[in-house]
Image 1 (spheres, helix red, strand yellow):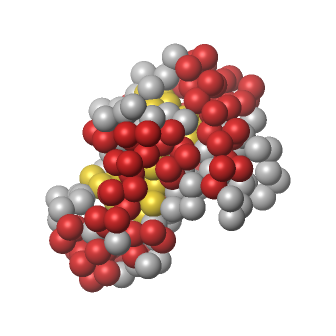
Image 2 (cartoon, one colour):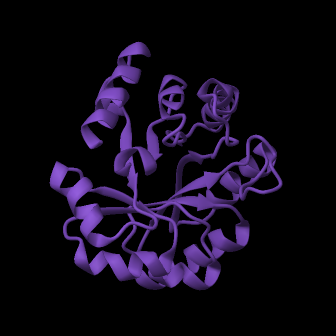
Length: 211
């Protein structure tokens, strides 16, 4: 499973004339047991994991050693106090959340690395900001010394045809370039190859690694 995903990821990089090390694979561990994560991911030599829920992460993290954790779910302001260990937060979606991270970062002497979550397709069922609102949030975060926006994140609409996601990934890449950022967190099990072809620097993959 892991090796097959790596093969597909490398093939997508080759098709788009990119080096495999330009794309970070975040293994999504939502709903997976510690033993399952150990067997399917860590025992394969992969140590970059992503969690969607703070409580689930708090239960698992003590049992998984030497892991680079990413937070990829919706972050509530009252859970910010738990976020110091995360290498990257993928879901900054409001000025109030940015300000809460800034306040904690200032108290703890910590700089949070974050991605602004963009709802490119404008789906009512999804978190994230419109492209103009995302750009405004990037500008706001630039005034906060303890919050560093390194890029953007999106979730494409669910579809059985991965190709249908291409337009959304392309829109996010263009917005990233316009804002002068670096990272693009986009692409999941169903569409990560298209995301890589469109410039993803981070893909978030769960199902394809475990099933």
